[in-house]
Image (cartoon, rainbow, N blue to C red; front, side, top):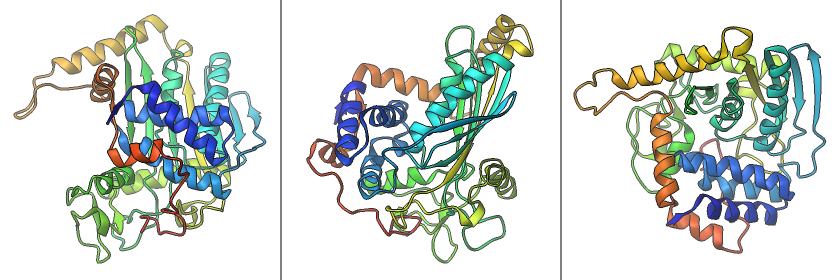
Length: 349
Protein backbone atom coordinates (compact mmCIF):
# COMPACT_ATOMS: atom_id res chain seq x y z
CA UNK A 1 0.00 0.00 0.00
CA UNK A 2 1.31 3.44 -0.94
CA UNK A 3 0.16 6.63 0.76
CA UNK A 4 1.07 10.27 0.45
CA UNK A 5 2.97 11.78 3.34
CA UNK A 6 -0.13 13.75 4.40
CA UNK A 7 -2.40 10.68 4.24
CA UNK A 8 -0.05 8.57 6.35
CA UNK A 9 0.46 11.31 8.93
CA UNK A 10 -3.29 11.85 9.29
CA UNK A 11 -3.97 8.13 9.85
CA UNK A 12 -1.30 7.94 12.55
CA UNK A 13 -2.44 11.17 14.19
CA UNK A 14 -6.04 9.93 14.43
CA UNK A 15 -4.90 6.68 16.03
CA UNK A 16 -2.88 8.55 18.67
CA UNK A 17 -5.78 10.89 19.42
CA UNK A 18 -8.08 7.90 19.80
CA UNK A 19 -5.58 6.34 22.21
CA UNK A 20 -5.78 9.46 24.37
CA UNK A 21 -3.03 11.83 23.21
CA UNK A 22 -3.87 15.51 22.91
CA UNK A 23 -4.05 16.70 19.32
CA UNK A 24 -0.92 18.88 19.23
CA UNK A 25 1.17 16.07 20.74
CA UNK A 26 -0.37 13.54 18.34
CA UNK A 27 0.56 15.82 15.46
CA UNK A 28 4.24 15.97 16.51
CA UNK A 29 4.44 12.25 17.18
CA UNK A 30 2.92 11.45 13.78
CA UNK A 31 5.25 13.94 12.09
CA UNK A 32 8.35 12.25 13.54
CA UNK A 33 7.11 8.83 12.44
CA UNK A 34 6.21 9.93 8.92
CA UNK A 35 9.66 11.56 8.68
CA UNK A 36 11.18 8.12 9.29
CA UNK A 37 8.92 6.34 6.80
CA UNK A 38 9.49 9.03 4.17
CA UNK A 39 13.25 8.42 4.41
CA UNK A 40 12.82 4.66 4.12
CA UNK A 41 13.54 4.03 7.81
CA UNK A 42 10.38 2.00 8.28
CA UNK A 43 11.65 0.49 11.52
CA UNK A 44 10.91 3.86 13.19
CA UNK A 45 7.75 4.74 11.30
CA UNK A 46 4.18 3.45 11.03
CA UNK A 47 5.09 -0.01 12.31
CA UNK A 48 5.58 1.59 15.75
CA UNK A 49 2.09 3.14 15.93
CA UNK A 50 0.36 0.25 17.67
CA UNK A 51 3.04 0.05 20.35
CA UNK A 52 2.78 3.78 21.08
CA UNK A 53 -1.02 3.62 21.04
CA UNK A 54 -1.01 0.76 23.54
CA UNK A 55 1.37 2.57 25.88
CA UNK A 56 -0.63 5.82 25.61
CA UNK A 57 -3.94 4.10 26.32
CA UNK A 58 -2.52 2.19 29.31
CA UNK A 59 -0.98 5.27 30.96
CA UNK A 60 2.70 4.63 30.30
CA UNK A 61 2.81 7.88 28.35
CA UNK A 62 1.80 11.00 30.26
CA UNK A 63 -0.92 12.64 28.16
CA UNK A 64 -1.07 15.82 30.25
CA UNK A 65 2.57 16.59 31.04
CA UNK A 66 4.01 19.61 32.81
CA UNK A 67 7.00 20.45 30.62
CA UNK A 68 9.70 22.59 32.23
CA UNK A 69 12.89 24.06 30.81
CA UNK A 70 15.53 25.30 33.24
CA UNK A 71 18.66 27.15 32.13
CA UNK A 72 21.57 25.82 34.16
CA UNK A 73 24.22 28.08 32.60
CA UNK A 74 24.81 30.45 29.67
CA UNK A 75 24.89 27.53 27.19
CA UNK A 76 23.17 24.71 29.06
CA UNK A 77 19.75 23.65 30.22
CA UNK A 78 17.53 20.79 31.35
CA UNK A 79 14.24 20.02 29.67
CA UNK A 80 12.03 17.84 31.89
CA UNK A 81 9.61 15.87 29.75
CA UNK A 82 7.44 14.62 32.63
CA UNK A 83 7.32 11.22 30.87
CA UNK A 84 5.33 12.51 27.93
CA UNK A 85 5.82 11.14 24.43
CA UNK A 86 9.58 11.23 23.88
CA UNK A 87 9.06 12.53 20.35
CA UNK A 88 7.20 15.57 21.63
CA UNK A 89 9.61 16.32 24.47
CA UNK A 90 12.69 15.88 22.27
CA UNK A 91 11.27 18.17 19.60
CA UNK A 92 10.47 20.93 22.10
CA UNK A 93 13.85 20.49 23.80
CA UNK A 94 15.62 20.91 20.46
CA UNK A 95 13.59 24.10 19.90
CA UNK A 96 15.10 25.43 23.15
CA UNK A 97 18.58 24.33 22.09
CA UNK A 98 18.23 26.11 18.76
CA UNK A 99 17.19 29.38 20.42
CA UNK A 100 20.08 29.18 22.88
CA UNK A 101 22.70 28.36 20.21
CA UNK A 102 21.60 31.32 18.11
CA UNK A 103 22.22 33.57 21.12
CA UNK A 104 25.36 32.02 22.62
CA UNK A 105 27.00 29.98 19.83
CA UNK A 106 26.45 26.58 21.39
CA UNK A 107 23.93 24.81 23.56
CA UNK A 108 23.84 21.53 25.44
CA UNK A 109 20.37 20.44 26.47
CA UNK A 110 19.72 17.49 28.74
CA UNK A 111 16.29 15.95 28.16
CA UNK A 112 15.12 14.08 31.25
CA UNK A 113 12.20 11.77 32.02
CA UNK A 114 10.85 11.02 28.56
CA UNK A 115 9.52 8.05 26.64
CA UNK A 116 10.96 6.53 23.45
CA UNK A 117 11.69 9.30 20.94
CA UNK A 118 12.09 7.42 17.66
CA UNK A 119 14.36 8.56 14.82
CA UNK A 120 16.97 11.01 16.14
CA UNK A 121 17.49 12.31 12.59
CA UNK A 122 14.28 14.31 12.98
CA UNK A 123 15.69 16.37 15.84
CA UNK A 124 19.14 17.06 14.38
CA UNK A 125 17.43 18.02 11.12
CA UNK A 126 15.54 20.68 13.10
CA UNK A 127 18.88 22.32 13.84
CA UNK A 128 20.23 21.95 10.30
CA UNK A 129 17.14 23.66 8.88
CA UNK A 130 18.09 26.66 11.04
CA UNK A 131 21.69 26.71 9.65
CA UNK A 132 23.00 25.07 12.81
CA UNK A 133 24.83 21.82 13.52
CA UNK A 134 22.79 19.32 15.52
CA UNK A 135 23.99 16.35 17.55
CA UNK A 136 21.72 14.03 19.52
CA UNK A 137 22.11 10.80 21.47
CA UNK A 138 19.83 8.79 23.72
CA UNK A 139 19.42 5.67 25.81
CA UNK A 140 17.43 2.55 25.06
CA UNK A 141 16.71 -0.55 27.10
CA UNK A 142 19.37 -3.27 27.57
CA UNK A 143 19.45 -5.57 24.58
CA UNK A 144 23.11 -5.56 23.51
CA UNK A 145 25.85 -7.86 24.76
CA UNK A 146 28.94 -5.88 25.82
CA UNK A 147 32.15 -6.96 24.11
CA UNK A 148 33.20 -10.22 25.75
CA UNK A 149 29.86 -10.57 27.57
CA UNK A 150 27.11 -13.18 27.30
CA UNK A 151 24.10 -11.13 28.48
CA UNK A 152 22.68 -7.72 27.51
CA UNK A 153 23.83 -4.61 29.38
CA UNK A 154 23.51 -1.49 27.21
CA UNK A 155 20.87 -0.55 24.65
CA UNK A 156 21.32 0.32 20.99
CA UNK A 157 22.20 3.86 22.20
CA UNK A 158 21.93 5.78 18.90
CA UNK A 159 23.84 8.90 17.83
CA UNK A 160 22.75 11.42 15.18
CA UNK A 161 24.45 14.38 13.49
CA UNK A 162 23.30 16.90 10.88
CA UNK A 163 24.77 20.00 9.29
CA UNK A 164 23.40 22.40 6.67
CA UNK A 165 25.02 23.20 3.34
CA UNK A 166 25.06 26.07 0.86
CA UNK A 167 22.51 24.51 -1.50
CA UNK A 168 20.00 23.28 1.06
CA UNK A 169 21.07 19.66 1.20
CA UNK A 170 21.69 18.25 4.68
CA UNK A 171 24.71 16.13 5.52
CA UNK A 172 23.29 13.77 8.13
CA UNK A 173 23.83 10.50 9.95
CA UNK A 174 21.61 8.61 12.38
CA UNK A 175 23.02 5.33 13.62
CA UNK A 176 22.60 2.80 16.35
CA UNK A 177 25.81 1.73 18.05
CA UNK A 178 24.86 -1.84 17.22
CA UNK A 179 25.44 -3.56 13.90
CA UNK A 180 21.74 -2.99 13.32
CA UNK A 181 18.91 -1.26 15.18
CA UNK A 182 16.28 -3.35 16.96
CA UNK A 183 13.62 -1.65 14.85
CA UNK A 184 15.13 -3.21 11.74
CA UNK A 185 14.60 -6.64 13.28
CA UNK A 186 11.02 -5.70 14.13
CA UNK A 187 10.55 -4.71 10.50
CA UNK A 188 11.96 -8.06 9.36
CA UNK A 189 9.46 -9.77 11.67
CA UNK A 190 6.59 -7.77 10.21
CA UNK A 191 7.56 -8.95 6.72
CA UNK A 192 8.53 -12.48 7.88
CA UNK A 193 11.99 -12.04 6.40
CA UNK A 194 15.31 -13.42 7.62
CA UNK A 195 18.11 -11.16 8.87
CA UNK A 196 21.88 -11.28 8.23
CA UNK A 197 23.75 -13.48 10.71
CA UNK A 198 25.91 -10.50 11.73
CA UNK A 199 23.07 -8.55 13.39
CA UNK A 200 22.21 -10.54 16.49
CA UNK A 201 22.62 -13.67 18.60
CA UNK A 202 20.19 -16.23 19.98
CA UNK A 203 19.74 -17.44 23.57
CA UNK A 204 22.97 -19.44 23.32
CA UNK A 205 24.96 -16.45 22.07
CA UNK A 206 25.23 -17.89 18.57
CA UNK A 207 24.56 -15.80 15.42
CA UNK A 208 20.99 -16.15 14.13
CA UNK A 209 19.17 -15.30 10.90
CA UNK A 210 15.73 -15.78 12.46
CA UNK A 211 14.36 -12.42 13.73
CA UNK A 212 12.05 -14.31 16.11
CA UNK A 213 15.00 -16.04 17.83
CA UNK A 214 16.97 -12.87 18.57
CA UNK A 215 18.04 -12.71 22.22
CA UNK A 216 20.63 -9.91 22.01
CA UNK A 217 22.16 -7.52 19.51
CA UNK A 218 25.89 -7.02 19.02
CA UNK A 219 27.84 -3.72 19.06
CA UNK A 220 29.43 -2.35 15.91
CA UNK A 221 33.11 -3.16 15.53
CA UNK A 222 33.23 -5.15 18.77
CA UNK A 223 35.01 -3.20 21.53
CA UNK A 224 34.71 0.11 19.64
CA UNK A 225 30.91 0.01 19.48
CA UNK A 226 30.81 -1.17 23.09
CA UNK A 227 32.87 1.87 24.14
CA UNK A 228 30.57 4.19 22.17
CA UNK A 229 27.56 2.73 23.99
CA UNK A 230 29.25 3.49 27.29
CA UNK A 231 29.84 7.10 26.21
CA UNK A 232 26.20 7.60 25.15
CA UNK A 233 25.00 6.05 28.39
CA UNK A 234 27.14 8.40 30.49
CA UNK A 235 26.06 11.52 28.56
CA UNK A 236 22.34 10.74 28.27
CA UNK A 237 21.91 8.74 31.47
CA UNK A 238 24.42 9.18 34.29
CA UNK A 239 24.94 12.88 33.49
CA UNK A 240 21.20 13.58 33.66
CA UNK A 241 20.45 11.66 36.83
CA UNK A 242 18.18 9.08 35.20
CA UNK A 243 18.51 5.27 35.25
CA UNK A 244 21.54 4.05 33.29
CA UNK A 245 23.27 0.89 32.04
CA UNK A 246 21.26 -2.26 32.65
CA UNK A 247 18.92 -0.27 34.93
CA UNK A 248 17.24 1.51 31.99
CA UNK A 249 13.53 0.69 31.89
CA UNK A 250 12.13 -1.88 29.50
CA UNK A 251 10.24 -0.79 26.41
CA UNK A 252 7.74 -3.63 26.74
CA UNK A 253 7.77 -5.00 30.30
CA UNK A 254 4.88 -2.94 31.69
CA UNK A 255 3.21 -0.40 29.43
CA UNK A 256 1.51 1.21 32.44
CA UNK A 257 4.87 2.37 33.78
CA UNK A 258 6.56 5.57 32.67
CA UNK A 259 10.10 5.18 31.34
CA UNK A 260 12.26 8.04 32.67
CA UNK A 261 14.65 7.94 29.72
CA UNK A 262 17.38 10.49 29.01
CA UNK A 263 18.55 12.21 25.82
CA UNK A 264 21.23 14.81 25.06
CA UNK A 265 21.11 17.52 22.38
CA UNK A 266 24.11 19.59 21.34
CA UNK A 267 23.61 22.51 18.96
CA UNK A 268 26.51 24.46 17.40
CA UNK A 269 26.22 27.80 15.60
CA UNK A 270 28.95 27.87 12.89
CA UNK A 271 28.93 31.67 12.91
CA UNK A 272 30.75 31.59 16.26
CA UNK A 273 33.62 29.53 14.81
CA UNK A 274 34.09 30.52 11.16
CA UNK A 275 32.60 32.48 8.27
CA UNK A 276 29.09 31.09 7.75
CA UNK A 277 29.08 31.33 3.93
CA UNK A 278 32.45 29.63 3.74
CA UNK A 279 31.30 26.90 6.12
CA UNK A 280 28.14 26.20 4.15
CA UNK A 281 30.03 26.15 0.85
CA UNK A 282 32.63 23.76 2.25
CA UNK A 283 29.91 21.36 3.38
CA UNK A 284 28.47 21.45 -0.14
CA UNK A 285 31.97 20.85 -1.50
CA UNK A 286 32.42 17.92 0.87
CA UNK A 287 29.25 16.24 -0.40
CA UNK A 288 30.17 16.86 -4.05
CA UNK A 289 33.73 15.65 -3.52
CA UNK A 290 32.49 12.44 -1.90
CA UNK A 291 30.24 11.80 -4.90
CA UNK A 292 33.30 12.16 -7.18
CA UNK A 293 35.30 9.46 -5.40
CA UNK A 294 35.96 6.43 -7.63
CA UNK A 295 33.49 3.70 -6.58
CA UNK A 296 34.67 0.27 -5.54
CA UNK A 297 33.65 -2.86 -7.50
CA UNK A 298 29.95 -3.51 -6.99
CA UNK A 299 29.10 0.13 -6.29
CA UNK A 300 27.69 2.65 -8.75
CA UNK A 301 28.91 5.66 -6.77
CA UNK A 302 30.03 6.93 -3.38
CA UNK A 303 27.22 8.63 -1.47
CA UNK A 304 27.57 11.15 1.35
CA UNK A 305 25.89 10.26 4.67
CA UNK A 306 22.15 10.83 4.40
CA UNK A 307 22.08 10.85 0.60
CA UNK A 308 20.39 7.48 0.12
CA UNK A 309 17.64 8.49 2.56
CA UNK A 310 17.21 11.78 0.68
CA UNK A 311 16.84 9.90 -2.60
CA UNK A 312 14.22 7.59 -1.07
CA UNK A 313 12.38 10.62 0.30
CA UNK A 314 12.29 12.22 -3.14
CA UNK A 315 11.02 8.96 -4.64
CA UNK A 316 8.30 8.62 -2.00
CA UNK A 317 7.20 12.20 -2.65
CA UNK A 318 6.51 11.19 -6.25
CA UNK A 319 5.18 7.67 -5.77
CA UNK A 320 3.86 7.54 -2.21
CA UNK A 321 5.25 5.94 0.94
CA UNK A 322 5.10 2.14 0.95
CA UNK A 323 3.38 0.67 4.02
CA UNK A 324 3.01 -3.04 4.83
CA UNK A 325 -0.62 -4.14 4.31
CA UNK A 326 -1.03 -5.44 7.87
CA UNK A 327 0.06 -2.08 9.27
CA UNK A 328 -2.20 -0.16 6.89
CA UNK A 329 -5.18 -2.32 7.84
CA UNK A 330 -4.49 -1.59 11.51
CA UNK A 331 -4.23 2.16 10.84
CA UNK A 332 -7.61 2.33 9.09
CA UNK A 333 -9.32 0.10 11.65
CA UNK A 334 -11.22 1.19 14.77
CA UNK A 335 -8.85 -0.87 16.94
CA UNK A 336 -6.59 1.13 19.26
CA UNK A 337 -4.33 -1.84 20.01
CA UNK A 338 -4.38 -5.63 20.28
CA UNK A 339 -2.49 -6.07 23.57
CA UNK A 340 0.46 -7.17 21.46
CA UNK A 341 3.31 -5.58 23.41
CA UNK A 342 2.52 -5.37 27.13
CA UNK A 343 4.55 -7.49 29.57
CA UNK A 344 6.92 -8.74 26.91
CA UNK A 345 10.70 -9.01 27.11
CA UNK A 346 13.15 -6.61 25.49
CA UNK A 347 12.53 -8.35 22.17
CA UNK A 348 8.72 -8.27 22.45
CA UNK A 349 8.29 -12.00 22.84
